[in-house]
Image (cartoon, helix red, strand yellow):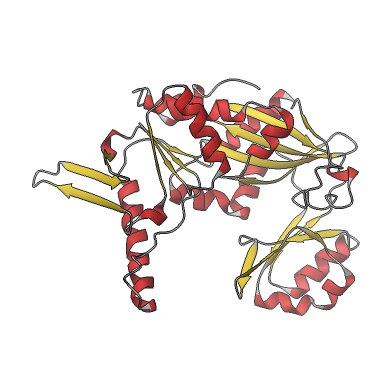
Length: 340
């Protein structure tokens, strides 16, 4: 049985769930936000250590020990019962419930896609990513992560002011129910004038990489799907392609050099993941430069734009565990497929 943890409006999960059901896969979909108001979870142990774990939701009773693969997509946090109206009590209950469900999931002895939460947290860390990518032979842009105004100014002069900046981890902030997102941006002279503000919070600075195009490389197990993003064809996407301009930006499949494709698989494996979305650039002189990896990045938009069969590979990966073959991580990855 496959357990999909995500919220109801998740287009990626909806798409994959449909394909899994077409293949005859047995699956359960659950959102943490359903607990505890719409779901019950019981975890029991006998004196000799035998355990039982049951999820009751939507009129069904599910033996969670039958779960063979978990896809941890994007579940919401637990939501307390509406009857609890005291704000402090609600907050406490929701924290307790989150700890409990994380504890329950940690007891499931099966592969997790992309990985258990603790592994995903480490894989998100930018310094860890850059260090490992460098060890594997990826070319990196000159990078400085700092809260030192002096070190930033020296780095700025070293690269003649040709820098970009990006956040270390949190891409957005919510104020008065409005979300403000922070994309990658060019460092301006105005930024230099406010260099002293760095003492409040560290920032990532990188030398600008000349781009012929950018690459979104999705690794599913051992299957690698590379897509070209012609971000330089639109002023809107030139610095950060996440400022989507679908009318001016082309998305095409890309054939990676075999050695680079293998390094992408190695990076995902070394981070302890079954899945990863890697961002790179191809320079005008033909060099591939690594930017970062998202352990649980979106992929459906690039699949729909290019026709790359990423969802099929993901179904293969999820069903490998539910087939009853409780393999090692590498064995499960190998069953995800070969080159795209």
